[in-house]
Image 1: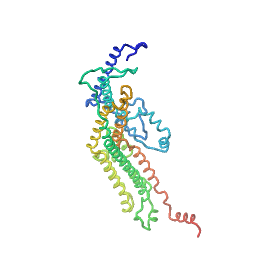
Image 2: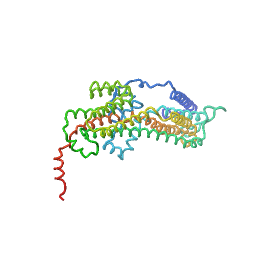
Image 3: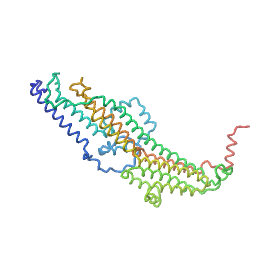
Image 4: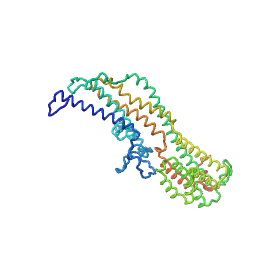
Length: 443
């Protein structure tokens, strides 16, 4: 059907226009499908090297309008997913408007942009199936009049598949996607727990070093209070505890660099070390083959120089063993993905299932005009299922979406604060006894 000046053109002209339109649909769908799965297709922005960003607690798309398109989705967007929540963020997270907000920002979703090629491919197949079946099976115009097939041949028949195949395979596909997503989330959760241990034990280490500084008695000794009160050089104490704090920060910062892409963090890492450590100390860590190990060694030496009983030093060194465990656990996650044959089979299963789905959906949408609703239905199903697989892929490598720079900055600040308390609360024995006598209830 064609309209011109409010008049309906003759049936012949209507048929010819529909034929040309359908042919154009078939050509576009075939070309698009090939392009979507072409191995030579490249992203023009992929080779653009972006300035190094040390990271921040900000999450969301880049606020700079001049930011390249590569920062809006894909690898470039991962640095904007490093979420740190405070009370304000939790209030927004629980807001009753969250569903409206999520729907309104759907077109900006990095997940959906990442699966755009796959969704375009499956939708193109749906367009091809629809156009072909309309051409060989007849079509209905806008006025409801049925027309004969435009391609009349004994070899030209409608194409389709029984829906039973897809309903039978759906539970298996669902299990694969669930296991894939759960395994990826567990990897993210494990990495976050490793960094949680780092945070806890860096504070524990500096707290014990500060409180036990100058105490030569063994833990639990009755002479401990008297030993604490002996003369301590304030300048030496400040320097030695400052070294413990600095090398604690140097370890976690080196661990962050060890787990981050070189082009994102190398320059910032070197600049930060040179700004906080002496030139010799910074160069020793920077030039090391395994930088976290070197920083941990320097931390061990700093602990060994502290004037305290060796049993107390042993307690401090237990934290360093935990640091080795968290470092090794993170290296394991970084170097060992989910078994590739599992990920590949899931991706192949999902892709084949969705590419063939339009052949089964055509007959299910007979109540819509020329079955056309099968096209948006295919697009919606593809976005949903490809999105689940994309979520699992994004979570599988957790370190570029964890706010490790924020963790390091907080650890450095907390350790500096803890070591600044040196000597506080270590009053003379007479003052302690006087305070106890004053606050003790009368007998």
